[in-house]
Each structure stands twice: as structure tokens, then as C-alpha cells.
Image (cartoon, rainbow, N blue to C red; front, side):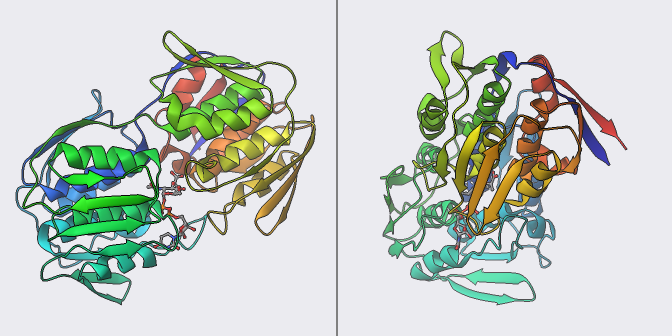
Length: 419
Ligand code: EPZ
């Protein structure tokens, strides 16, 4: 089992290259099944979630080649097959359900393991299915497998009860080859939605309104291949920004899209953390002592839930009372228990976490509970006294490529060890 060993002390300083966005790459890789022609997707980080998605696509017959040094994937889905036994892999990675939309769009049929719940919540797919049903899909769920069939996908009007990112992406992928027009109301507006729409338009799809709450798609006869560069990862970038804030450091993030970071930049500004555009990227540094704050996670352009744990680390060392409210997932405070082992003063009441900042955070043995919670523990370890040992780091490596190497380059004393 691998662990991170972190010795606190250093201020993060220097330049870090931000990788391509996991949550943009995953739906785009799935969407490549919609065309027989070759797609070239660049800026794809070799994360475990990406490797699992590529393995899944190969299981449906796609030819994959992944140049991990160039971070470039070639996908050619000439012939697709629906395996009799759905991939068990789909059970472990929720994003695998994103192939449902592209299989329906291409073949009119899909058979997938239902994504189970995960640490942060039950993760239902009812909104995905609601959209598919509007488009004429019949679904049957039994023994943990969902069978989806549509004689001919037809466009329709889908109202999403919640602006679900995955449901918006899945319905977009099913709609691009459907007969007629589709309108998605109360759609998610995250940058990753726009990136998927850009990829699909690059393949000849007719989509507009992406990035707003209403997306319009007009079905076309077929899609051709294309080349696409994945947007930078705003959550990886935000994670390093918080690290700079917590260690009173001074870091330049290379290759970020400032627009995507606006909600994070706004909250950091509230607690005396400044950002400025510089020649090679976005500089982030602290100006004055950290100030406590209140934050509430919301759909984009609200504050991202994927940055909640990292900000809880920041608030844990910020003198004063802070409040973190998690509205997106029902169980996304698991990291608080591990932070308390390091001395953080956090009280959870339903969707609210009351954080009393303190200056006595000490190293400890902790475990990553989920992807972002694990990253938040690394951040807290940077500001702790002494050594912190973080277990279950496979959670972290699902979404952060070579995080220990990037932190070392910024002056952090961190080692990955085998236990
Ligand atoms: C995507 O998950 C991201 N994952 C998540 O990032 C992110 O936290 C989330 O969007 C919100 O921004 C990927 O893009 C691979 P949702 P997704 O559907 O699509 C409820 C990370 O750390 N819901 O927007 O699964 C759901 O239960 C990960 O990188 C339904 O009720 O999120 C949740 O409470 C974690 N029914 C809320 O909506 C549905 O059919 C948001 O879920 C679908 C969702």
C-alpha cells in the first residue's frame, strides 16, 4: 500500500504546470464513441480514472493508443460491441456511466453496470434516465445492470430537476445524432460542459447555449473525427492556490484558464489571498493574515463542491469562525474526521461545517477518504507541525497527476512510500 509522508515547513514557491481537466477529459473520451472516425484528444493526464475510462472504451471495441508522455489519446471506434457481461469496472468509477449517452447515440442501445454510490453520496442516475426517456429510450434495471434501448432516438425537451453535470453531458451525447431537436433546461453550466460541446461541434454536432442553463442540440446524420485539446483542470489549479495561501507562499500556475477560477479567486480574495496575471500564468500569494469566511457550494458559476475540502483545510488554520455549507452532495464532509485527528476544530451539523481556526495543527496518521478530501489532507499537512502520514492515496491519484512531484518542485518535503 502506498502512502504520502509530508514534513511541514516550506512555503510553496515557484511555478507549477496545471494538467488537463479530468472532468472534461472523461466525457470527451466517452463522446469519441459517437463517430467511426479517429479522434485525437490532447492534454489528457494519465490519471487512474482516465486509464479506467480507456479500458472501458476498449471493452466496447474502440481502438485506443495513449501517448502518456505527450498526454495525447487517439481513439478510433470503427466497430462497437456491447459485451454480454457489462464491465465490472463501471461499478467502481461513476464517470463510466457517461458512455451510456454515446452508446445510445451511436447504436441506440447500452448495457452498463449501474454506478454504485461512493464516499460522498449515493450518486443516483435518475436525471440521466429521465432525459433518455424523453428521447424514446426504454430502460430496465435489474441485478445492478441497466439495459437501455431506443428504436430511434428522437429529440425532445428535458427539464433537469437539478443542474446535474453528468446528466447534462449524457443527454448532450445522446442528442447529437437523434432525430430532431433537443432542449435541455436547467442544464449544468460548468466549463467542462462547454469543453464537451466544443469537442462535439469539432466533430460536426449542432449545439448552442452550452455554458448557460439552456442547451439546444439539433440532431445530425453522423459525426466525423476531430482533434481537441482538453481545458486545464480548474480544481487542480485551485488546490495549489490554497496550498500557496496556507503556507504564505508565492506560486505561479502555468496553463490555467482564469475565467474558470473566478469563484475560487473571489473567495480567496475575501481572505487576503491575491492573484494576478503574469507572463507565464496566474500568480497567487497572500497579502496580510488569513481571514475567516463563509462559503456555500453551488452549481457553476457558484463555488465548486470539488474545492470544499481544500477550503476547509484553509479555514482550519485561519484564526476565527468560518462556515462551510455543502449543498451538492449529502455526505461530503468525511475529510473533517481526519482533519480533527490533526487538531482541526470542526463541528458538523447536517450540511454545515463550523470551523474554528487554530494554530496548533500537528502531523498525524490519516487516510484519504475520497479524491478531494485526500488532497485537502496534503494541504493541511503542509501547515501542520511535524510529520503527517497519509494512507489510501489511490483516491488522490484518481484526480491529481504526479501531485507529489509537483509539490516537491514547489519546495515541499513530500515522499511517496510503499508500506
Ligand atoms: C461531476 O459529478 C464531477 N465528476 C464531480 O467531480 C463534481 O463534484 C460534480 O459533477 C458536481 O460538480 C465528473 O465530472 C466525472 P452531478 P456528477 O450529477 O456528474 C445529484 C471530483 O471530485 N444527481 O452534478 O456525478 C447528485 O446526487 C468529482 O472530480 C441526482 O440526484 O455530479 C448530486 O447530489 C466528485 N440525480 C448532485 O446531483 C442524477 O441523475 C450533483 O451531481 C444525477 C445527479
